[in-house]
Image (cartoon, rainbow, N blue to C red; front, side, top):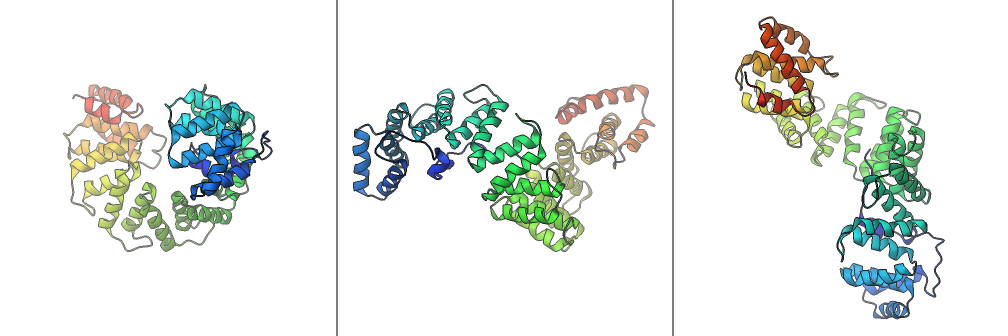
Length: 427
């Protein structure tokens, strides 16, 4: 449920989403009129471009701003900056906002996050929702201002109340995770709903997850499925994956393995690693599709290449036992190592088996014991036979070897230290 981050593309939205609709400027040219002239000028209307130039020459801040926008769209960022500076000093909120973007993105000027944040702040104080949103992102990340999640959440709320979907989404994330505000799943659902209602795919996806789990809303799998479909239609690939899981498990919908495979494939074809892995499992087990170990291994490989620990384990298992691929203990060892490094208990157990039997690696009862011991100590080890394997190893080890193995267990269980600990071990 990650936040939406900075995108200059938002500046292409409607004027009302950028500046407050109540913003009054002491000028004879209205913002809507100037925006129309700029759009016409881009279509080679010399007359409207002349009108903008004449207004800017007279010091009209609205004309100055939109002449800057015109230069921006031509890629003449230095010339745009000059007009924005003039208008911003006269209090034009859109000019202040665009100056903030220019300094943030190094458009026609050296990047300066502090100056960028200061211009966003000026525009935000005038009620510009997009400026409030950008400044909130700065407070979220500590970019140009001291990191302050509470200030960020307040600014998201200011922009969200004006209808900016990106701000509504991020405020929903804040309430769901308790970042800068008191954790409140109901409030999160409300803000996700508002953004989802405006067609934001990520918000539709997050709201679907809440309905699926009954978090902040009454559990409703049919509503979750509807929202996942909307999110998928808006390009959210993981929504296809979650729909597939609902069909595969018969969760709130009739169980349909063929439909699950279809959706897994759609998501996998878009490169989503969990979908690639689960499609591989379908081929492995013949669920919803004809059983094919070679095709399963191909999909596992795609997901493993993206770092998916489950796929790394599944592919390692295939190489260890020659399922759908040529048996290769060395490759199995590499895959189990990487999967185990990410905490996959089954991979630790299989890695221990390689060391126990000396397959693809030098035989080592100490390393095998340490891996079984680490797996047994894991919170995810309930269904593994790691404890029994550890006891089996201990029965043929000396007290000194067990003591060494226990120290190695400690090293292996340090975060992301499995590979380093085993590589550093000297019998």
